[in-house]
Image (cartoon, rainbow, N blue to C red; front, side):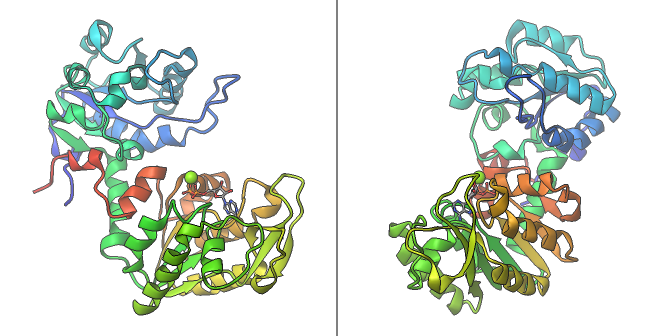
Length: 396
Ligand code: ADP
Ligand code: MG
C-alpha cells in the first residue's frame, strides 16, 4: 500500500526529524567526499521542508564506527557539502541525542537545518534500543524517512523512533518505492531482467521472485558460470556454486514453463587470472579452457542480449556482466549501460555496483530510475517487506 509522505503532514513550525542516507564515500586520507550523489538525492525533501518552514533535523550514519566516536566519520564535511548544495547554513552538533542535541534543536528557527552527529557513534542505533529511539524522538514532532538505502535494517533511527512519532516517507523514499514497486506490480511487457554479479547465491531470491513476472531473463557475470555448468558446459576455473547447480537448472526449467526465455552467454571472455595485468581471450562457451576464469560476456553475447533487450518495454538490471573493476573486463558491462541509456523503455537499475557504474559513466539521467539503495533494492525486489517501510503510515 502507498505510504503517507511529507506532503500529507502540516510541517510549518514543526520539528521534523528526517532520516537521510548521507553514508557517502570519503577519501580516508583527506576526508574529502568523493561522491555526493546520496546528499543530492535527499535535497527535494529537505528543500520542501525548508520552503514549508519546518525546523529540519537531519540524521544519518556514516561509515562503520561500530558504536564508538570515530573522528574521521564525523558529519562536519557532509554538513558543509549540504550547505553548499542548499546555499543555506547547516548547523551541526557533537551528538545526536541528549542535552547538546536538544539545545541545538531549541535554537532552530522555522526553515533552519540541523545535521545531527553520526548516529552509529551509539551502539544503541543498530541494536534498536528503545531508550535511544525515544531520546531521538524527543527532538521532534514528526519523523520522515528518506533513507531508502537503510530501510532493510530495523535500527533505532529507521524503526524504533516510529513508536513515538508520526512517521511518513520523504520524496526519495516515495520515488524508490514507486519505481521498484512498479516493476513488481504492473510492468509494461515485454519485461526483461538482466542479471549479473559475482554469485548466484546472492541473487536466488530475487530471481525466484521476478521469474513469474518477466518475459525474458538474461544472465551474465560470474553467476553465469553456475547456470552454464547446470546446462552441461565446462566452465574452467570459474567459481561454480555446486550446491546451487540444481537450483540453476530448475530456474531455467521454471522459466520455460512460464514461457519466459532464460538466456545465457554464448561466448565469454576468459583469463588465466583475475588481476589488473591479465589479458582476456574470447571463446565460445563450448570451448572454455580448463584453467581459465570467465571474466566477462563476449561480443556475440553483447549482440544477442542487445537485440533481445531492444524489443522490451521494461528492463530491470542488477549486477555487472563481468569483473568491471578491471578495465579490460568491463566491456560487457559498459555495453549494457550504453544500451539501456539509449532505450525508450522503462529502465530500472538496482544494486550497489551496478548503480555505481552507471553513475561513473554519467548516464544515470538516461535511466528511468537508478536505485540509491543497494541491498535495500534487492530485498525489496525479493518481495520482502522492508522493516523501515512497514512502519510508515499508510495512505488511506
Ligand atoms: P550489485 O552490487 O550491483 O548488486 P554484485 O555485488 O552482485 O552487484 O556483483 C558485483 C561484483 O560481481 C563485482 O565486484 C564484479 O567484479 C563481480 N563479477 C562480475 N562478473 C564476474 C565474474 N565473471 N567473475 C567474478 N566476479 C564477477
Ligand atoms: Mg554488491
